[in-house]
Image (cartoon, each protein chain N blue to C red):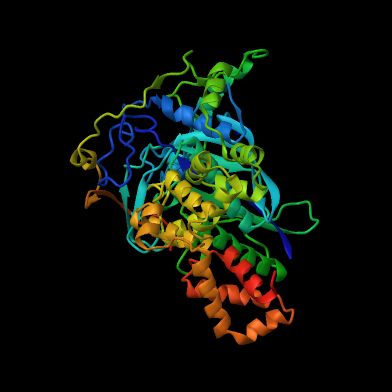
Length: 97
Length: 482
């Protein structure tokens, strides 16, 4: 039984905005399966009585005081934008007609 | 006729000085993209660090809404592509929200309604998009300002307990009042620091199963909220009446046209793939910490209303009107401290003062009420001593609002002292009796009601300054001999 089906690959590719060829889908399907099979080894561990953890490091409450710090210059903020206009990031149409 | 089922998702920006994960300013109205840094722009290699004030404010909001506060909470990534989200995910909270199981009570036509709060969670604000067209629909392109991105935000999710568009508005008004009391947000709907999305469905009365729902967005005022939902009730009713299905949909409220429009998003069926954010460690809160924050909350609207009824003997209605704004409540209380007579003060505040505030379009959350409690107390003392009549008092109050002068000054300048001098009043009464033989006959022949007309004529002749009680007495003496 396939853990990952072709339609799962297509769905994930769509969510990640990736246009995959049929060969790539095939390849990625196999690779994802290998990854998931590997991760499935964890299912063999007996976790009875183990609290679920939310993080890999045993730290909590890393907080900062509510203090302002200087922001970066606008020119620098916009420097990597594919396109900027009037001090804004420019983006193409968001919704379909 | 169908039963209307509404649930709201309310977003509230918290009034911290700096953003939730970085030190950028949260001030409204700055030049675009000048309050940004590598953290809130989501540049690679940066790490968010939680603002302790944002955590405190979110907990305080939860406490004010009667929620249970989690002792262990964490942040999750909500993944989706949208230009206002520089990281392509929003840091939010998924399965372990900070607050759960609260409720808000409010009045609908004199009846107390209770809407349960399912959860309140802490998340980051998105950037602001400016669209090339009138709105997002049909815009050729959009411009993005990330100043707003990363401002701390709470999302308040209600249970589907709201039963009409009007109730939805009243709920939001009460929620806003509560949050304004706590001071965790300025709740300015016009600036977007308080806004909501509404889920609405209809079902035949008696039906247990919920109907298909639509989500309505872009509700930027109380009025828009109520109107958009009224439109959805009409639209969905018409579909159901015609035997057609309501489609699950996200719809955009168009204020100008007064309609909701389907937003056929490019996004497929939403799949946010939440997972714990590895950049942020969990947060634990001790009972002691939570209780400290609870003790720092001010008296909330319902508590204040209950105290006004108890301490000042006010009717429930008065208590609710006065406490709907913390500024008005404080003004009322400070006036009572100086003048006493809570019901008299309440009548003046609810009537004249609120009317003038509305007429003069004074935003009392931003600017002070033009007169002081001392000023009103002085005016009420003049009325109660009989120096001026009640009606003249109302005019004096209006002049106080507009000129900033004291009641005593205005009364003196305009010669408004009430005429209580018997000789002067008798002269006025005799004049009115001479000019109105008809009504005088009526009174004499037993139609005592006509005396009211004559009192009115004397008041008019005195330009409102005659003491009406004394006038009444003198008229009765003259005409009825009693």
